[in-house]
Image (cartoon, rainbow, N blue to C red; front, side, top):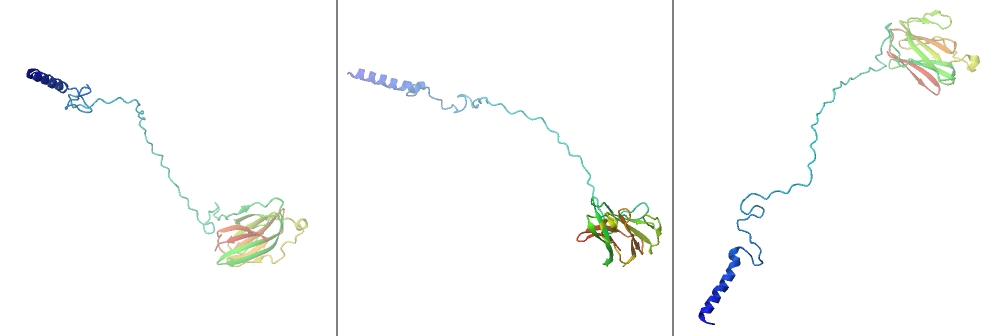
Length: 236
């Protein structure tokens, strides 16, 4: 090959190699990115690429709620005084006896066979002991005077006040076959109790009268068994 032809071939070869580089194509024929093109934006601007619209819908915004304060309730505290020391009084001014009324059990057939009067730490207990079937009832209250069942006579009881004890569920001796109380009557008292009277059974009841040396005092009624008893406890 002549020297001229060799120089021409060399020039053509060099031009051929420079064409892809100058036109911006890579070796595979793909368009080369400009050095100023952002990975996420437009090649000529710095704006970010448009975001892809979301395919999920936003949850609806709940309506505003209005909080209401609960109505204020006033608490009431009730304090009850011990029944053994302070009791309500009747319109007559006489105190109410705690547990002062109770009915007998059905079919009760009893007799009062003993009366006990005891004083412990100033508290006087009058105990009525029963023999027979069932449990007795009672009605215990303060009265202005001792009026006897059946006859209506007034019994003179020493002291300033009178406590009447009416015991129910009691039968006549010829019905129950039980001999009633046959001890001292009236029964001598102790402490501020002057004496205790016990009347014979009358129409299913036995009446008892308790004399107190002073004004009416708070009292309460309880029961016990073995033997069956009704206990009247009087505070000093």
